[in-house]
Structures are given as structure tokens and as C-alpha cells.
Image (cartoon, rainbow, N blue to C red; front, top):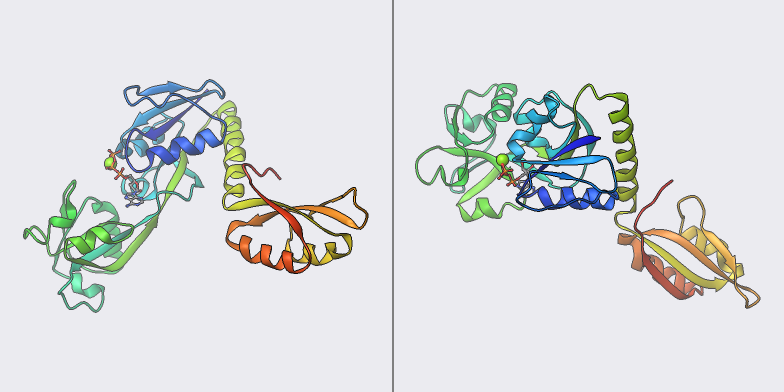
Length: 283
Ligand code: ATP
Ligand code: MG
């Protein structure tokens, strides 16, 4: 049995649950239950606030956890990062009132900066050798300059819309963040084996993201041309059709290139093209 800490509600909750589901680990996600057991994998889910996940995993209260890299860094977490998960992407940035003349980070010398991430900010300022005052506040950081609590802010940014609507502009990016899977340093052999199994499944799910499975019929003498357009996982699958001189070809395609490739395949005589969803890719 392995215990995984997930955010109980918030921006990482749904995607964390979805990732585990796609990895074949289903469980109850009732908002009232703090602990849930999976029926199909020896795993137990512990729902926590994201602030508490790094410490819980560091101390071994949970064996694994899914948390933002920003939260992991802020808590100076001693757990190990075992996998970057690619969702919950955001950055931690410095922002100033939009009317300010800004040239470089020396601007912040002697300024008051409001943030919920004092540890990360302190390290950033020390690295740049800037002496600024840090105002630690738990939330509503964006409002701090307007109400005279600070001159600037250091906070999470994704689209930048919140900054703009508060009359601020982003001027420095201190770190990029995404959700990460973290693990207790000393897992038992049995738990390590479960973690390896979980990672294998997560990688299969990730590999299939943005990929489609494509099938088509084409004249057998155009297979080499089609193979050049569609390099598959190793090599495309070719099956003969009942009609002489024709074959069926199957391959995996990157979704972003799908339409361009279909156009080129049609040019070389491909017909009856089917595009299917790809769920898992196990190599
Ligand atoms: P909790 O109640 O669990 O303490 P919270 O309010 O502290 O939640 P959320 O706003 O749910 O936290 O954000 C959780 C994590 O999601 C952040 O630490 C960050 O890694 C990521 N995140 C935050 N804002 C965004 C965003 N706008 N876009 C993408 N990811 C984000
Ligand atoms: Mg939090």
C-alpha cells in the first residue's frame, strides 16, 4: 500500500485525479472524505491543502504527493522530485504598477515587495544582490500596491490577466512552475516497486498526449512515400488489402502535424483515412 497526497480542492485537484484515473487508479473523490482507497491499485489518497503536502511527504505521512514546484521550493521541502507532470504551469514573477519607469532589477533596491512566497523571493533577491523589504501576506497580493501596502508584488502569474486588471505589469520572472510528483526519501522496497509501476503508467499516458492513430488505404507502390511522411513509433504497420495493388497503413501522428500530413498523404493517393484517439502508448 502506498499513500499519495493530493490537493483537496483548487487548481491542481482535478488534473491530479484525472492523471491517476488515466493510469488506471480510480477512487472516490468525494469532497468530504479526507482519505480514499483505490479499488484497483494498492493506493490510498490523502486530501490536503497544497501548503501541507511538501511537509507531509517529507515526514512520510504520505509516501508520494502532487504539488506545485513553487510550493515545494517555498517549503524548502526535503522530499525528492520524481517526475514533472506538465500541468499547473505558471511562473513566479515580480510586478510593478504599470505607470512605473522600469529598466532592470536594481529598481527593487529599497522597495517593499508583497508576496506569499518570501523564501523564493528572498533567494532571488540575494542572488541578484538586491536589498528590498519583503511584506509577507497570505492572499490578495495583487491589491497591495494600490492600497499602499507595498511598492511591488511577487506572485504567481499564468496569463497575466489578474495583473493587468490590478494596474500592474510583470517585469521579472524568477521561476517557472508546474505540478511535480514528489516522494519520501526512504521508500521501502515494496513502496518503491509500486512507485515504479505508477511511473511506468504515467509515462505511457504522457506519451500518448497530443498523438493520434491514423489508418488509410493506399496503392502498395506508394508505401515508401507514405512512410517518409509518417514515421511511426518504430515503423508503420502495413497490411495487404483484398484488392490487388492496395495496402492499409497504420501509424501514430502528432496532432499538431495531423492536417498537414493528411494533405500530403492524399496527394500521394491515400484514401479512406481514419483518425482515432490514442489512449496509451507502451513501448
Ligand atoms: P489550497 O487551498 O490547497 O492551499 P491554494 O489556494 O494555495 O490552494 P491554488 O490556487 O489552488 O492554491 O493553486 C495551487 C497550485 O496551482 C499553485 O501552487 C501553483 O503551482 C498552481 N497554479 C496557481 N495558479 C495557477 C494558474 N493561474 N495557472 C496554473 N497553475 C496555477
Ligand atoms: Mg495553498
